[in-house]
Amino acid sequence: DTAVSQTPKYLVTQMGNDKSIKCEQNLGHDTMYWYKQDSKKFLKIMFSYNNKELIINETVPNRFSPKSPDKAHLNLHINSLELGDSAVYFCASSQDPLSPGELFFGEGSRLTVL
Amino acid sequence: DQQVKQNSPSLSVQEGRISILNCDYTNSMFDYFLWYKKYPAEGPTFLISISSIKDKNEDGRFTVFLNKSAKHLSLHIVPSQPGDSAVYFCAASVLFGNEKLTFGTGTRLTIIP
Image: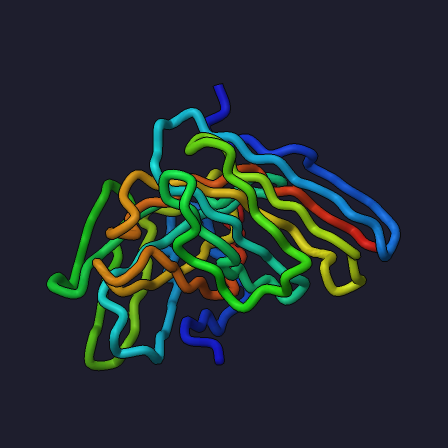
């Protein structure tokens, strides 16, 4: 059983399109995250949610909109895709939002914008 | 502004020898540090952590050392095994601040049989 699963794993799309990446965790964790790993290999946080509430929103264009229908799911929707959005997007979860501790990551979703 | 730096993008070590991966940080507010290991096409997995009240934490073949005055930490793997070949990320945060981890860019470790 995969603890944190993301779909799709690969996504190739044209500039200007809208796409979504889904994430689900079966660990019973309260906090979920989206991280982006760009071409320079920086792994940076984008958003975090705790019990469906947004608690971190880094400097991310508002074309990116996370949605958490319940605490086991955190989806990422991206509007009007740009070339610079090409990256690997990792979903993660953790038990305790106040103590960073251990993050459990999904396998990543590689987005390529042409 | 890169607050967590891993200046060696790659490292090759003979099997059975010690692997030492280094990490430097600039933010003096960081007080909790973690190492993650990443295989190709997989997400990072937690390896070991250390809080700033300690200068060493050991877990089997893995030991993390923290030098607060130098703002430097290192991960020692001994003995190194072929399965240790992976990318290792150092990460740092403010404990009980928020849950934002700041990652380094990773070091690719290759263990030579």
